[in-house]
Picture (tube, rainbow, N blue to C red):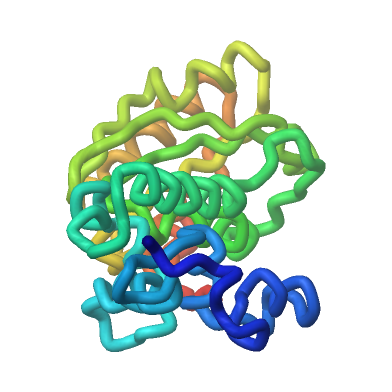
Length: 235
């Protein structure tokens, strides 16, 4: 029979520890153990949780972003994790990504590229494919809507002016900001990024819409193409 949580000493039970001390006092292994619930005949649930954490090949062992890249099949290779537990882990990973996404109906004002980075860095820095979004603004730079417009491969994104501008035209918005990520983590714009920005800038001007900026998100860094291409650091 699997080793159940209630069979552990009280001082080692993650459920009780979270209830008494709060989640911030628990280790990564203990938090995972709450999700996994049970271990195996030979291993406690904490042991199984540590086996999950050992899938991390990065030097920064406290960095949990690697979990987004682990497949259901890879989770199931760990003794004590079947299909149900593997799916539960993937569901938790997806929830963390969605929690990081900005809320479209919240009144947010964009002053500069740093505001864009603050909004989208938590979500986009983890993506393994290039994605692009259009931030639709009113005349006071308040976000009206955020539109996903493109999903590329591991190192490219295909942006067409009509896709970028169509929703802004429908909403009669005066301003937009384009944002996309570089999965490599390096936010430096490519030649194609700059050419695409120039093309969209020209098309938006014809339509009476101001392209305020095109911000590229890397891993902890961002670049504002229309603000002299200056590279910034972001937490």
